[in-house]
Length: 261
Ligand code: DGL
Image (cartoon, rainbow, N blue to C red):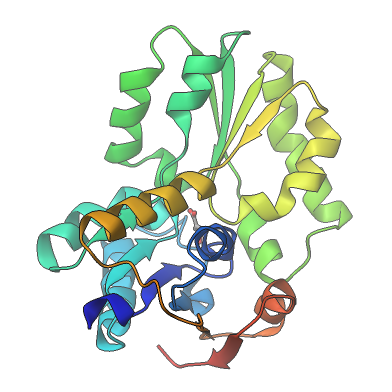
């Protein structure tokens, strides 16, 4: 039965685990297969065509493994490749985009910050969403250059990360932002360090919960929900496994493996 198949999730590395965690919390009966393409991280500095090619490679592997739906748990891959994937593969795709809309609708200071990769901030999809919702709002966009490789290495609570974050966030604080949008699935792992810099007056938003809810909606609409399962989770990385193991170690029924893809 198709509903017994797994939810496939991919990212350029371990960042998408922030989304995957929301999915397994909301959908506890579902099996999942997660691909961390850490060997090719970061995607954020690559060309649109390179991001499409890597997304195709990940999608085909998840389809070979029989996945019933694919969650592109990467803003950079979503904003550059999801149209191509939807046109070329006959399976539902869920993407993740920076949550600009709620930030722009709720800001009281009329200033919001967006921290994302270069690939996301320069994409057509990001521009069209941003133009639709941010008229009259001061939007401070910032590329989080250098953050993803450090997160991949597990170097999170370090002075190097704190210095980079301060450099990226200080100009936003100077503009009096009250919302900060995390537009890269790796960045939720930095929330404690970001909070130290921005304080409690700034609301930090990421899209993880919204992606999990949307996955639930589409599975329900397509009669693909698995309601009778003891869920199992297979997580593959094509690079060092340590950071992944650290993140999933407290979660039940996870198998973490190296795979060359
Ligand atoms: N985690 C990804 C994102 O959400 C990509 C980070 C990268 O590989 O540059 O954009």
